[in-house]
Length: 224
Image (cartoon, rainbow, N blue to C red; front, top):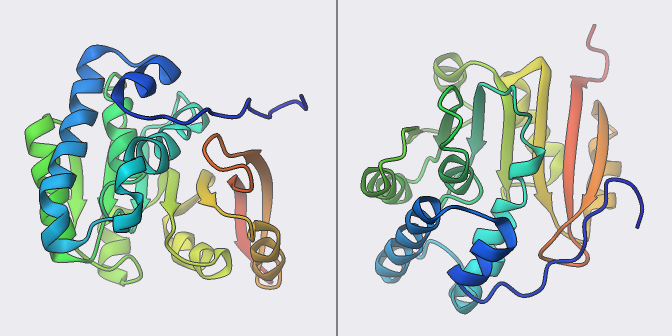
């Protein structure tokens, strides 16, 4: 198997299979189960995820988010999740990395109802996260949040546009972790017309054609 690649992930059918695959302690698993239970309760009212994915929640959403944990540098002190939605991947990462007390996780979600859901999950799981119900592209949000050591996003926008949204949150040492599907190479090619960056691709553990896109040294073309 090539260096840096991962073995494929067998179907994660529920919390037990998730715990075995990711080696999470009971407290972490209980928090993730609560997240999943609350999602099921809120889903009929606000459509947090595509209804067709609910039977595969632990594989399609929980495990898909959890695979980013090993890509978060241990020394990271700030993680910013853009367009957090139902908490994938940002809230899952906050739960799984709760043993890193110096890591501050910020979730940005403009939809008021989804933000309310995130706050309720954070409250019931006792996970200390900052949740901002605001748009990621506004100067006010960017000024309040500042830059992060890690920036994450999932199913938010094509990479060319996503990197533009990320740029105000980017510092020289920032690493971007983005979950992308089968069109990742086309997205990289398009992004390269506007942006310069170093990129590494990791096979997704949950979808054979998907990739984890790891971006460093992001700058606009023509930027000094």
